[in-house]
Every structure is written in structure tokens, then in C-alpha cells.
Length: 439
View 1 (tube, rainbow, N blue to C red):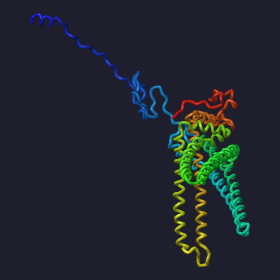
View 2: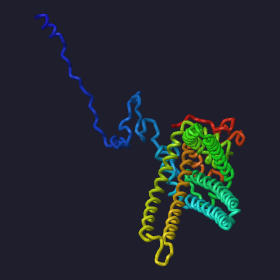
View 3: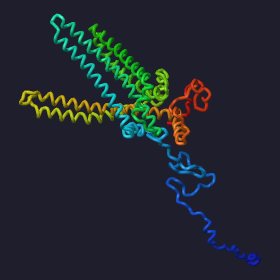
View 4: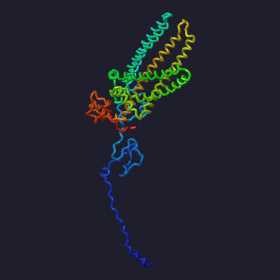
């Protein structure tokens, strides 16, 4: 115990640590401190410590800017759609916006062409049918069969004229709408005369493509129907095979038609915007739709269903109302003067329904062509980086550095731009270079 007390007494006392005096804040120092601004939505309130890394799978909110990073900027949207890969909602909504943004040149052109086709059909086919039936009525009993056959041939041949007119005018309408959609994406609006003049330069390749489609359809149907008829004529067990072949052929042709029409749906856009021939346009459309078949098919079919449903919602109630009106106003088909009121009401009904179908047919043509055009631009953005070229064009246009013949939708080839193949993003084989797809 004595030793322990002696050791404790030998320990020197601990002196208290004197703290340095802290000078008070001066007003100048407080004023020199920059004010702290509240962070924007999605940003951090404090900078992360050095060496900090976000956990795996974490993605900052849109608009958030980390240390040393530029803030998020929304994609440029000079016109119809933003210049970036488009979502499914944009693909569905943009075709209907085409009508709202430039109704006169788009819907007006479609109405003019639809009306012209209807007038030509009524005059040519109606006139030929009137002439043929008048000859049949005046034919003698001995010549009745021959005159009837000749009348039928006249009516069938007369249908070739409106088919040819529809072929050319349909190609013209496709070209007009493809050009209009491409200009609206760049924020430009064209008048009807400008669209018609620009579309007229590509009308014949489009007409050739439409004729090629019609020829393939006729040949395939003729072969299938010929085989079925031949089997049916043999009788017996062959008749059963004819029915089976008919069912299988119908299902197979439906699937084949859906596949081919989707894969080749971009051909008109390639012909018009890239100034390509029919063969090159077929190859380009086939390649652009690779790995995007179902999205392209679903978008085109859904838009068609929407337009068809809307037209039926309007047409069917009118048909029902007029049908009831015929029964109420003219139950016997004639009025007191003996004039057939039923024919007047039926004529008015068909005229009104015809006008409504004409309008909805024009709307359908505009919306479906616009759908294909927007899909074409989206696929080129995802596969070829077209949005970068469009942004450069818009910026150059705003700065006044563009020329009248500059077109960002054209694809440079080795034949047309051998010296600028690398700068334009093209390969030596003349095909555009394929960057990493942005899905």
C-alpha cells in the first residue's frame, strides 16, 4: 500500500489544454461566402465524396447532373417528332398530328385524288355498262348470247381505265404524303403546289412498284385458283383435296401477305426520299425492317384498325337511321303522286354514305402513309443515326449555311460521293454504315 501511494504521488498533475481563440466572423467574410442554391429536381443536394460510385443498377433521374457533368438537355424537336428514337406512343400519335399540322395540303390532296378516281370510274365504267346493256336489250334472240358476251367484255375492259388512273394517282398521293411528313419532321410546311411538283418527280418509280405488286398478286391468285378449280373438276376424292388446298392456301397466303407487306412497306419512302430505284428500294426496306418486324407490323395494323373503327362508328348509325327513315316516310315505296319516294331516299342515303366514305378514305390514306413514313424515320434513327444528320441540318439551316438542294434524308453512295464516303458515314460498297443499333 505504501509503495502504491508513493507511485501515485510521483505522477505530475495534468495541465488543462488551452484552446486557441477563435476570431469572430467579420461582415466582409460573411458577404464573401456565395449563397447556397437549392438543388433542382433530380439533383443531389451535396456533391458526393471523392471516390464515390453509385451502386450497381442505379441510374440517376432525368435532368440530374453529377459533379463535372453537363445537365440533361431534352432532344431537339423542330417539328412533328423529337429527333431521337421514337417510342410506341409517338409512332401512333404522330400520323394523326400530320392532319392537324397541315390539313389543307394533306387531306386536300387525298380528297382531290379520291374524288378524281371516283369520277373516272363512274364515267368510264358507268358509260360502258350503259352502252353494253342497251345493246343487250336491243339484241335479237339469235344474237343475244353473242351480244351478252361482248357486253360483258366491254364492261371488264372498261375497268382497266380507272385501275390505271388509280395506279398513277395512288403513287402520286404516296409521294406527296412521304414528302410532307419528312418536311414536317424538320419543322417545314409545304404548300399543295410545292408538294405536287416535288412528288411528280418520283411518280413513275412508285407507279412501277404499285404495278409490280398488282402483277404478283394476280399471278399468285391465278395459280392458286387454277389448281383448286382443276382439282374440283376431277371430282371424287380430288374434290376433298380441292377444299383442303383452298383452306391451306388461304391461310398460307394471308400469313405470306402480312409478312411481305410489312417487310416491303418502306419501299415508297426509300423511292421518294432516297431517290432509289425499285430494286434498291426493295433491298433497303428489307434491311431496315430487320429485327423490327413485329413493331412495324403492330403499329401499321393498329393504326388501320383505329381508322376503320372510327369510319364504321360514323357510317353505320347513318345507314341505320336512313334505313328506318325509308320505312317510316315511304312504307309503300311511292307517295300520293305515284313517284317512288323510296328511290329518292335510297339515292340520298347512298350519296351521303359515299361522301362520308370519301372523307374517311382520304383520312385513312393520309394517316397510313404518314405511319409508314414515321416508322421509316424511326428505323433509320435507330440503325443509321439519322437523328444526328437531321440535327446538323437543322442547325445549319438556322445558321443559313444550307443549300437549296441539301437533303438530310438522302443516302450518300460510293458512286455519288466517293471522296466523302468516310465523312458521310458510308461504306465503299455504297451502302450506309451501320452503327450500333439503339433499341
